[in-house]
Image 1: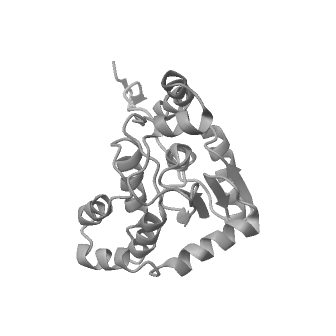
Image 2: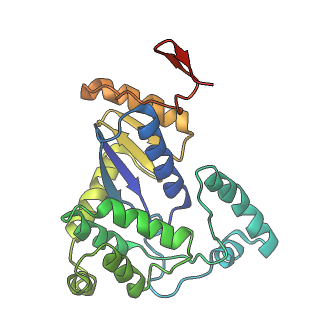
Length: 235
């Protein structure tokens, strides 16, 4: 089953949606039967490439609210993240420009490391409060993935590297009308917009599986302690 995921590393709902999808795949019984392709999407292409504003400061300036009101605005997102076991840290988050991060993601794809890179970068930004504008942060993730840091640095140095791939993702997003993320496309037939609840992903997976011609695997749940066999019962 093919699933395309349009997302941005700095998007709080994208990480939540990613976790919902992963949980749903396991719950619905499609582990090892799904091919996920990550598509780049920048929610703020005009953001600074230098050290950005703190998230709360950004809300205060753009929404004309107090610090306390800015904190209240993120409470719902923080609570939603907790539902999928993510502990968001808005106090440390900064507004960032994610083009370089996306270019590097395309580079990692050739090594089969794009999924791990995406997970690591979202965690670094949303949970650890790392600045994705900082080249050192991106290269630290590359090192963790046992990829060539020197080559990755060359990619970052050349602003044209992998821009064609990013342009293709933008074109694909325009073709299907993606205007916000996360956005999930199943078998080029069904779409989910936003970090929907688990049951929405499970239902859509089953629908897409019919098109793909695959069936869920058998999942055994529980410990099997309260059973009887061979004339005896476990007490």
